[in-house]
Length: 327
Image 1: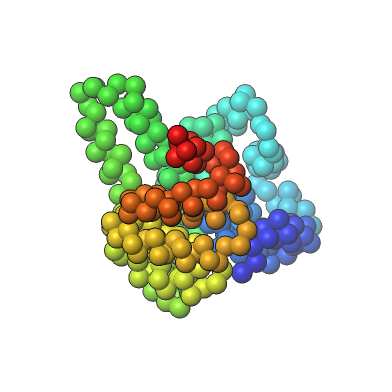
Image 2: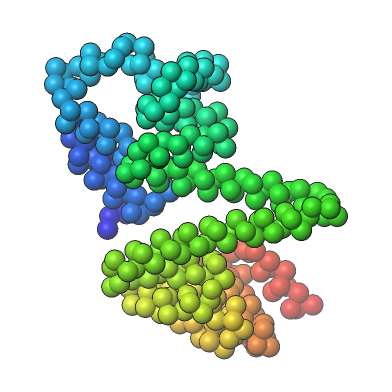
């Protein structure tokens, strides 16, 4: 799968500029396979789908899409929506007009989506989510809209967690402290369940794809389901492109299960495949050092830390750990 998204964006733009939205949509979908959370690719795919729909319905057959609009005002509104950097006043004015259109016809999918987009741009994410959810009920088959809605829902929940964590830190003795902690745990559990179910469905459709196995293993790991993650990551190791990442996460699973000898072995195997001192190698060395410390392997602990120390003095707390060993 191509991973140079910069060139892929250029290709998609080329297709769009040459009136080939179908190939542009395919290219944006390829980008989303590399990074499903790429908001620009999500928007690009949506725009390409809209252009393709317009083309199929013959709206642009006269060479001028604007002439087929219901009126010039709608064209101006869409043009303003697509402009980057609208002022707060412009957004508020456009929202006020869109609300009037919504009140006149609450089943117009374009009006509902415009409302959602404006609320999102204005930072009113709860309102944006409400209208994206409603838009999905009007057009449940819109894959791009569904992905957009899911991503925004995650952002809203992230903000809720951040707010509650800040409140807990500011007043750890508040009477509702346990309720907030329980809500945070509930949100994280819900999100983990969604990711796991989606990952399992992809694996079921293509069980030989080792990248999908890795993604499922990572989803299990993030949910604290280390036993379930292990067989998926063991299978993912056979893909040379993700072998090191799989071994690193596999070692972490063993460490979380207090199987520290197996964790040490997994980290050591990963190191054998890392010739360059990059971010991944530093991460593996640090994890190896922590496991060696648990196993009372002082020599292995310091050897791993010193290798990082010689390359990057400022990495985590490596300098403090190494220098204190000479005291």
